Amino acid sequence: DQQVKQNSPSLSVQEGRISILNCDYTNSMFDYFLWYKKYPAEGPTFLISISSIKDKNEDGRFTVFLNKSAKHLSLHIVPSQPGDSAVYFCAASPDSNYQLIWGAGTKLIIKP
Amino acid sequence: EAGVAQSPRYKIIEKRQSVAFWCNPISGHATLYWYQQILGQGPKLLIQFQNNGVVDDSQLPKDRFSAERLKGVDSTLKIQPAKLEDSAVYLCASSLGNEETQYFGPGTRLLVL
Image 1 (tube, rainbow over the protein chains, first blue to last red):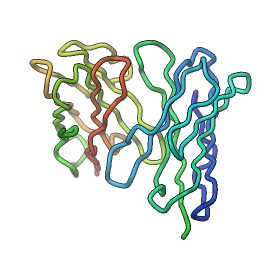
Image 2 (image 1 turned 180 degrees about the horizontal axis):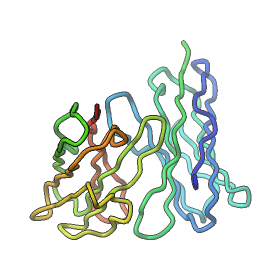
Image 3 (image 1 turned 180 degrees about the vertical axis):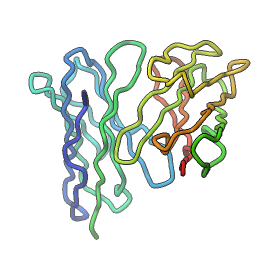
């Protein structure tokens, strides 16, 4: 039973354009959401997060949007750069113990 | 600041053999996590320590997996005996506390033949 779903295994975007990565969840008890970025042979690195009391959080080129009614969040990267090529994981926390439930990841490829 | 260290980086063993992984968290981080990441899936939490006590090990296959965190610093994860389906990347992460950002090590890639 996948509580956090990333339905696109991969995404290819032209350098300079916007990258939009999507994530859906099923558990309405989730109240904290995170995006992690992972390069090959490295561990995931925290990118950006959002709490359920907000619908948008922005950090430089990265913005996360949360639609609670649709149980959907998205990560926008503008403009996309070659260094953004990586696997992006969406994760959600169901309680204050911060135990993360992870999606399967989306591989983002930025084309020069 | 040094990151989370893990060793070995790669390990190949035959089924029914034993294997152990080591993790050294970021200095001062009270919480330590072990995750299993099977190819094509997201990380799955195996066990979470707060200092040297276990917070959650509900998804740890206790018939073959064990973990300890002596003195609340380094941790080891052991598999005995290994099965083919244990082939995965084992990630260690640490955080200041339960609700802080988790910092990951590079992982140990295990292949069971």
